[in-house]
Length: 405
Image (cartoon, rainbow, N blue to C red; front, side, top):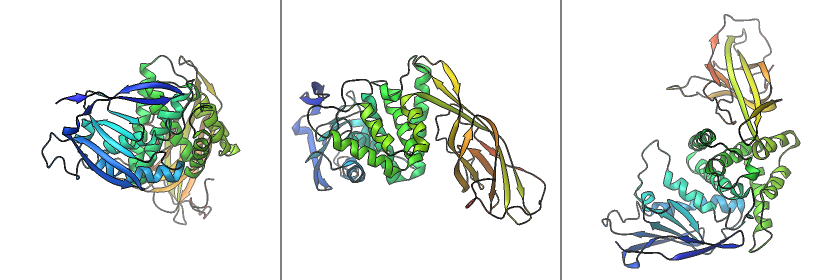
């Protein structure tokens, strides 16, 4: 099969940089079209496969499902910046995916993919990531200085997780989030130098992985609407051709503006420093009260450390809002229905959390969904040990209205 190599010029940071993308010749290209949010869209793919494989049911999927991505991005960050959106197939020995002006190019592996039950839809996620680049790195261009990786890959990966959450649900988004977290910790073990996100440049385990983790964690703490407001303001300020270009400090300014005073330290922890948490559940007991409620006691231990660029760590005082969860019976080792799930102030050292719930609990833990940047995430939840009872009737408030004792 012959191929052509057009040079697609793209401007970033105000400088012309060339991308070489191999495309199939017009005689071997089939095209399907659609309108997504009234944006003309086309899917260009090679048609050497059988006619059945060239059908809309398979190859058309990445195009027509772009509606979910454009809907969310347009509503959250502003209108799509171009008048056309194309998805192009490129050979597998090229890059897997790249965003280009008014288009995206993906290797043929993405077009061959078949997502089985229980698997993450990788082509959907990859297309969501590249679509987001039309905002992050396209519409709002970062300056060629430290921190530019946060403004492009981090925001694109965070946006893709949000689209996964809106399309497939919180459980799927949480799996993607845990994947990003795992890759971040793997990168910390492989590389000798780490920079805070405000200074990150091209280190993939930071730009793609930790950046997405930080943004999703902030969203969980201050709310999606607050984060979207900050990102929309950021895009609005830097949606233009030419200087001034955005820096990571511009993004941080917008994020701080929508973050409550009580959570300002979270911006410092996630973006401006290298901060890690260590929390674990040392033990958990439950006792049935005379009034039919269940008293849960959870013994936890917490620690917070800050690292420098070469990994030297020092402990710092911890006084952070961390989720405490009490759960009913689950299946196959999974957490059951949350009977209580609220954030509580957790300080350094050991402490006991006491909670009343109205139904019989089976497990309890601190940060049960592994949301914070914790290296040891297998010790956060404990099975409840039943204490003898019942005890004299205590307070009749349940966990729905009482965050603790």
